[in-house]
Image (tube, rainbow, N blue to C red):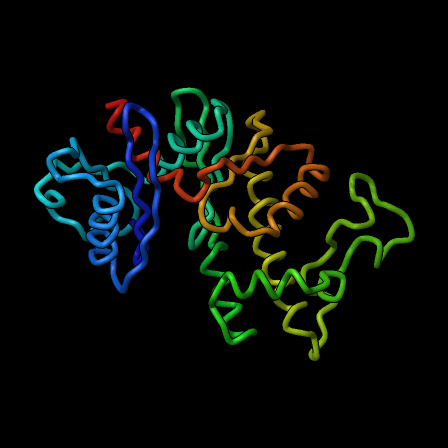
Length: 265
């Protein structure tokens, strides 16, 4: 449960099923709306639900049981790790949860540790887009960015050096937004905003992994669905010699992890 969005997934015979996402004006409305829709879409009755697990900042607004079904809570960082581990099949990885901000959780077998985070994420993307593009619709911003040229916004190593620097190819970013002009197109601005957010998250994940021996990063959350991820993160893989993974149900990993927390007691 977020502040206005609830992601819900069923765990049937140990396997996640029929994940959905519902947004509303507040966490309680989104929770009960998602729950009701899930029951309706999957032809389920309340008595068929064994247990409800809640996680996320919105879960703090829920007191007692949901619809009278036994309800428990799971720490969000634990849910992040369990869901990402299940979906990626990796036991040793840093889970990069790209929400409003971004958190980093180390998953090493049965040991789960929150190692930090940064205040850059989907909220940053929406806020800057609202100011610079007069929209906070991430899908619209992403579509604009697909038509933009990052070379019009970012300063690259090739712009400041005649030769590649040690460990830095010519196409690597030297400075975000350093080439932006006051008449930059909406498409280029959108491209720059998304590039800044995703590059900052990826580079921070690599720094968070320093000294851990971990080279695998699992990206979860709504931002993992941006088509720009398929371009930006592979470039970071080459630059830092790491591996970024985006599971099939990346946006639902936290909900899956909460369900698995109950299954595993």
